[in-house]
Image (cartoon, rainbow, N blue to C red):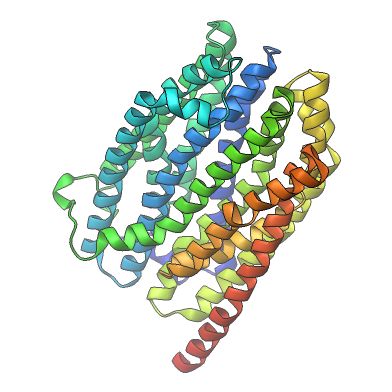
Length: 453
């Protein structure tokens, strides 16, 4: 059934890692670029309030990523392990559960956001100047676009679980490129402004979701994945396995939302330009996070498959190679963002105060890039082998556990810059905890490898 068995079992490890990771990183970067495109084209309007509104709405939109990770990463880990054990029927059931449940949950979320928007928008920091812009954005991007946004990302994870990294990355990239094409059309040409950005995002995610569904249908004879509802079920511990393994990534996203809401509410007490500045800086810094995420998510199926097949030597080689690649790229990315902060922010908006805030914040939040790469690979390693407690702990600490308290302390101590400094402090602390959890697990793997040998 799985035509990529050679990739998982026989291909030289460094080639297998590269073949899985490179397309995933590229698709992640394109996703970041098209998210930045919304801010860029809205910024060309020259209205800091609309740029601030996009930043304020991001937490509600990013929650969709959390749902996609819950079912996508949880499902892909279990599918990879099922394939490693040769259980194709279970892989089919996992895919059907993940796809249909993700669709239903996201649809419900979109409806709830629309109904409760009068309470939610003020809670995330919207004020008189930004409320109407926020309302327009979330209607199209979240209410109408919830299901396609979640399914697009979740399906990419599931397709990647069978080794179809290029196809998964093509679908994500296609959606991103389409978004960048539609943004200027809807924002500027048709004059929809911030609503146009949301419409472009929604339509591009719909197109990508359609691509993935078509791919699964056309390759149904060679793929374990299926969208057939007859394979949907709640037995064989599938729901608990998917949800508990995917939970850390979902929690990380949820805590990231809480962290961003806290940051925005602290920033808005200074001015909307500060909110716009940190919004731009955070979006640009997503380049580092995209690389770390792409490296870790790309190699997840390879680790999970070989762990279940008890090929521990091959699995450990994949982890080592990914660590090296990820760290080198993260350091290069950090240096680039550190040295080019001012021109990058100025490219988004030509408002002097916003550029001043954004450039300053950019130089601060880009510093922990290497720390993020280490933490993300360790979290993914635990997820790929079915661990539940360790990745959950790390996810809680990385976002919310460390950075929110530090935001309040640093804000009280040194003011607006202190809010931004909470990011590198929290990421460094999280990396230290991740390494402490990783060391005993790695030693245990070495013992198992010696036993098997």
